[in-house]
Image (cartoon, rainbow, N blue to C red):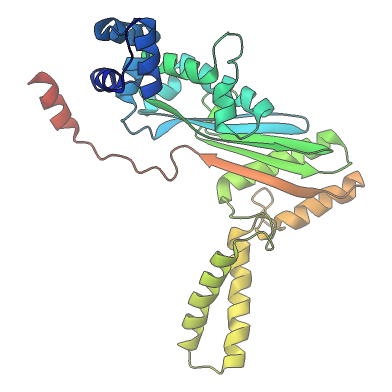
Length: 307
């Protein structure tokens, strides 16, 4: 067998665009023959997928999978919004969400798990789908919520199929109360979270850095009024209360009734079912949030393609 040197692996990586370990494996499989190794990588879809991996994938879908006391949400990105309407891509994302229910939010564990109904891993299935559809794709993030007693509810905004859309929410409610009533409330809260995007569940959960930054800004604004410090302190606390109502879930006005706070709405249901209800977790994913998208000149792309 030919010696698989670092230089040989590097040469294949440059020519194919595939990953280092994939190149080494390809060379082992082909006894160090570069051309045969490239063909091997192409057969596996690895060379094509690698060449696309540099493209920005900021579109795609969020999928939620929730049942009973557990649920998961994942975001899988693609290059274009059009792919979100592709049935193969939709099935891929839904299946990955189902895997995430079992594997939790660990991306590496999800990728290494067996893809449902197949003998390949999730990562291998993702690579194959990249080659088939022809766009870069990326399993960007995943989260899992569970409770010992209660429900994990979900909601998808602008759904393109069951459990698939641009915004996905999970909310975990801990309670001994009626599961059906909890599920109904959970869905309403999830819809509320979709609309308001709260930063935390309670005031105590809020990032202290964010609170201090807001307090600093409000204090500076109040001092410009020229009022005494004791008055300024009261003004700041009053304005902080408004800040909490804007960013804290339990303090926000419940969008479903437009009158009660979310906490008050929860307490009303708790009274009806005769059991306390606690929101112990929430996750809100919106496709592409935080990803810097490339600004492209479509006319220039067309001109380059025909030149």
